Image (cartoon, rainbow, N blue to C red; front, side, top):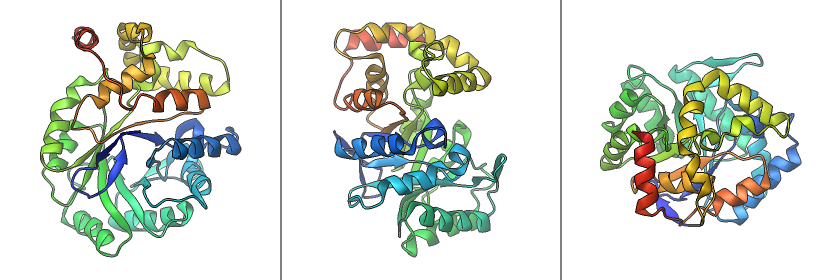
Length: 302
C-alpha cells in the first residue's frame, strides 16, 4: 500500500481507503463479515476509514467502532460526518452548530475514540459555512477532539467556496471516470492546501454493469438504489466496459488507478461487502494506466 499526505494536515493516509456505509453497516449484513473486512483492510495497510452518523440507518458508525476496538490505531485516520443523522425512520439534516457539536460527541462514543482523525460536515450549503460554524470547527481542533475538519459535498460550488476557507482542511468529492469535470475544482482545493478525498471512486461499479450482476440480496439492494438515484450513470458507465478487458488489471483496479493518477487526490475511497472485492481493489495501489488506456477513457468521457 502506498501513502499520500492529507493536504497540510500533517497526516499521511493510505492512497486507498475503506468506506464503511451502505449495506456494510446494515443489520442484514453479518457483523462478523463486516469486521473481517475491516481487519483485512488494516492488515493490508489501509489507514483511512470513512463513515457517517447517518449511514446505514445510523448503524455504520457504531459497527465500525466495534470492528476497530482493540486494534492498533496509531496510524489510522477514522473519518465521520456531522450535519445529518438517522432518527430511526429517515435521514434528518441539521447543520445547526449545536447539532454538529452534539453529533461529534456521539460519534466519539460510538466509535470508541478520544479523538477523531477527521470530522466532515455532510453536505453543507455555502451559507452554512459561516463564521460561527467555522469557529466551532476550529474549537474542536483546539480542544483536541479532532485532528482535522472537512466538508463532504458533491456540489462544485460548495467545494469552490470551501477551497478558499483556511479553517477547512479536507474536501471530499465524487470523483471517478464518470466525473472528469471534478478535476479542476480538485486541483484548486489542493492548491489551497486541502486534502482531497475521492468518494464514489469506483463509480458504483457502473463501468462493469454491476446492476445486472444479481447474486445476493445485497446486489438487488444496490441495483435498486442505482436505478432510483443514478440512472444516467448506469447508462454512461456502459461506455467504459473496455476497462474490464485490460490484460494486466481488473476493471475495478483500472477505475481506481484512474482516480489515483491525479496527484491532487490524497485517497480514493470505496466500499466492499465481499472479501475478494476488497483484496482486488486494494491491490490497485501503485498500478498505473498507460497512455493508450487514458486516451480511451478521455474519448469515452467526451
